Length: 328
Ligand code: VTB
Image (tube, rainbow, N blue to C red; front, side):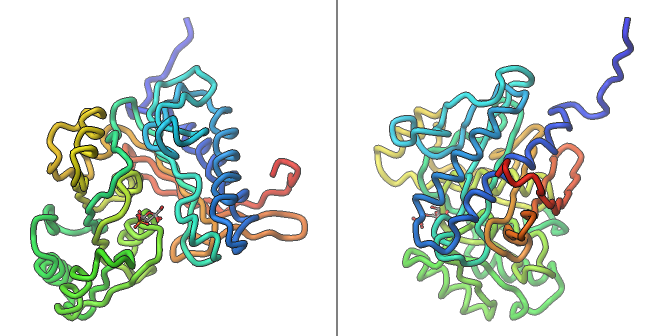
């Protein structure tokens, strides 16, 4: 009988961590070739194709739970699509082959290729609606931010916990008309705001390293799928996040109910959006505050990826030089 050492950690096979890097690297390189061309759709399409073909080499029985859209509106990587070799662990997958299609098309900072893999049943099956979000990085007392509290209270509590005046706090908010009031409230506290055009997965991740990114807190309404991806990332690095789906029509309430959501006003904690063992990877497409974008050299392509796992809280950064250019 062969001796099978017991894995020190339950959950997903850790080999998958590095496999995931290939998946986001591929998607990022494909999208990066179309940076700055003003064609969001084309950039997204090549990223989707690349991510899907790489995912289908993994020894998993994967189901896309957060993807490119519902089955009838997205031909590939739609919600419910089965991916992987069909052997190995049964996993749920949240993905965005190109998060920030517009930023990529304009060649602005912080577009990413992202994926999260979790044990089956441990990601929130969120419909493609808006989600109100609030997030901070690690090192703060539990409950320091709260979606039900006024923005000013959250900012002031955060400043106190960080031990700085409110004027040294920066909030990241999507630049949208719907945020006019939020922006006014935050500015009235004396805090600064970084307004971003898109890319709130990066916005949330940036709160985990304020010294490098200059962002302490993420606030506002963005996509629910991006919310689940961001929660998966924070589970691995540490931090706190809350999200509330914006189910403001009967139709949205019904769609959410179909996905198993019975309380339309529920505030989801990070651990409820991404529970169990979670792996997360993101590769920079355009240059950003945490990740460099893809660099095309004469004889090689360079990528920069962050990959992490919730059960061990290991965060790795992988700068790769790819020389077998035919593969890309
Ligand atoms: C945000 C942003 C994404 O969608 O989640 C946003 O982070 C929300 O939707 O990059 P609106 O653009 O309608 O405000 C994205 O822009 C992706 O589509």
